Image 1 (cartoon, rainbow, N blue to C red):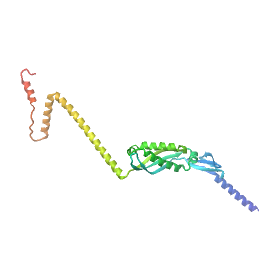
Image 2 (image 1 turned 60 degrees about the vertical axis):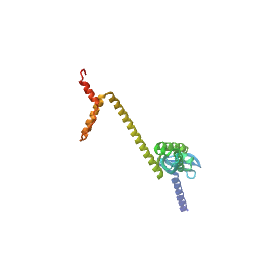
Image 3 (image 1 turned 120 degrees about the horizontal axis):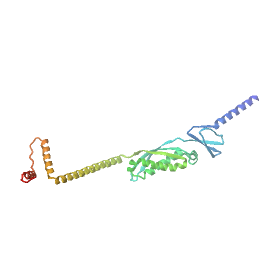
Image 4 (image 1 turned 90 degrees about the vertical axis):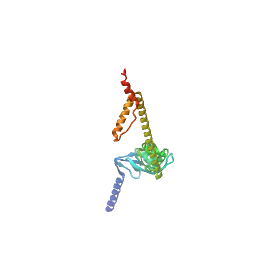
Length: 256
């Protein structure tokens, strides 16, 4: 009889210890526990030691750290009817554990699906050139839409980054030809602008020389000197008669 009492007491003690152990929860600094009392929301507990009465209370852990979610490649048709594949990465975290557990069944899956849909919708409103050149603005647009839609789930989307925009080979060649044509156009514009400036400078120089005939003659002689210095052969140039007129005019009586 005494042995049976000891055995029963030992079993009861083991059950009590098991009950106490099962009632103890330890939450880390970045964890929170959403506690339900008889199926109804009670409070958010943690971090640290949390006591849960088995059979009466249930607790769901929620991680408050930033989640890095990779958005798989999405088929996007741009506004100018170009088909591309786009993938991105989304950074978000839970700021309200109660909403993250009660308002949505699986907030990770829901955020992933919403990010994929939003990425296709936002990029589909833009042309291919905007996708390639204004990626920072598109990141902000996607982040703002995601953040507003996940606010009711207690989730804060902190950043969205578009990683790759994959084009097919024919589109890559077309873009290369377009870039080459653009470079040629710019080169022609720069060349034409240079010709325009050179023509204006020549016209200005001609007008200045026309106002001073002596300057024209000196320029003519300077050109002859340069040509004669560059070549070893004898070159015959016509000599303007204006030079002789000025010289003869200087020898006449009364000339100043």
